[in-house]
Length: 154
Image (cartoon, rainbow, N blue to C red; front, side, top):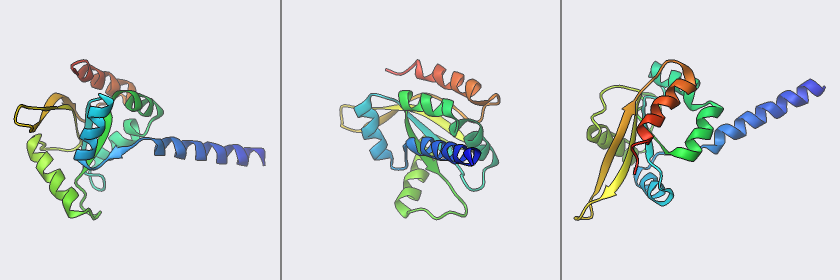
């Protein structure tokens, strides 16, 4: 009986930890949060329901406790999904298509680190810090690469 209770507590603990990360899907909201918190954005371009490397990146890195701890401190998370079987709101589809063009995304997964600056005209400009995708070696290797990009932030 004790083992069952401990197992249930562990499952609920893992589920609550996974739910604590906030992945934005609206870029305008993410920019506001990024500017307010003075953190760069991590744009995750993914094909969540068809891309094998995207799913592998999720399992091996993005769903780990190490990533969760790192992300809360360092970035504003943005998921830009291009599903084949899952329906999306038309405005999210349009936004994601535009961002795919802006960032020149040709393959998935692509993770782009960026900040946003307002120019004299009042227009917003993305400032590239770096990009990556799947990195072999689990969270330690992936986070080492990501940290290299974040050293460039303002």
